Image (cartoon, protein in one colour):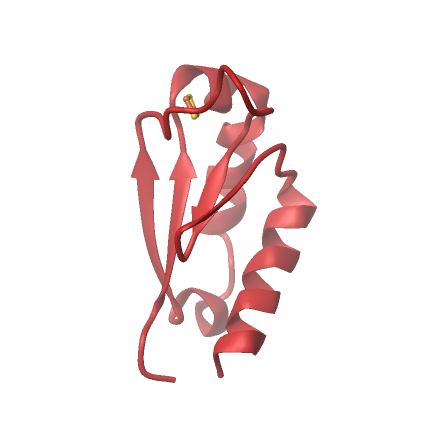
Length: 84
Ligand code: FES
């Protein structure tokens, strides 16, 4: 695989209190064989918490709302599978 997958997790207030904190913990405890494929950044607000259900993430430019910890891991694994 050549490019890393860009994963942005929103940790703005709305997202953080609605589950973003858990997403951050989940990502930080992922095994290295998954994180080595990721370029992880955090956003102070993806600008759509008023219109979409927090917490939000963006993965390779796709914005996904209402992400749970389990969703997040599945989304990341799927994105890695599709990229290799
Ligand atoms: S706080 Fe997450 S999109 Fe605004």
